[in-house]
Image 1 (tube, helix red, strand yellow):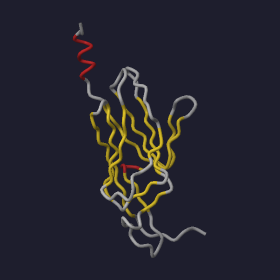
Image 2 (image 1 turned 120 degrees about the vertical axis):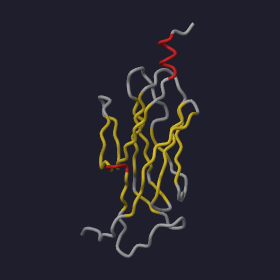
Image 3 (image 1 turned 90 degrees about the vertical axis):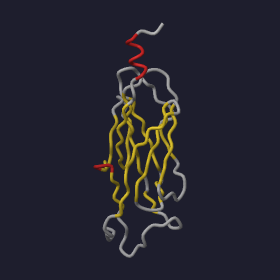
Image 4 (image 1 turned 180 degrees about the vertical axis):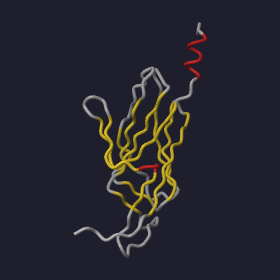
Length: 153
């Protein structure tokens, strides 16, 4: 027989946070380090002078991009799946990263996803869909084109 307390815990919704950076690394002590963190969930891609805007035929390619998804409010065994949605998909990304997350009661789970390379048909909204027990949770970030800059010599 379930108690009132266990029913409340079971009905809690998980909470999610998304961070985007050039890379995230899991340190030996369990901490996560971010390198090249993009503020406000906006990735600005600078084109070379004279370069044409990206298209589906000639997509925008970033060497790498990483996402850190923190998930809180879950405990116990849950299924996990990750998908990626792009308003201008050039090709499906190869998502590299954690395949399983250990949900420990009262702790936050960190899911690191790497897109190497990150390929998109252009600027716009990008969505990472995290499915917990087949329930989708959408987390958005944006790609914008910046000013055209000459490469450094």
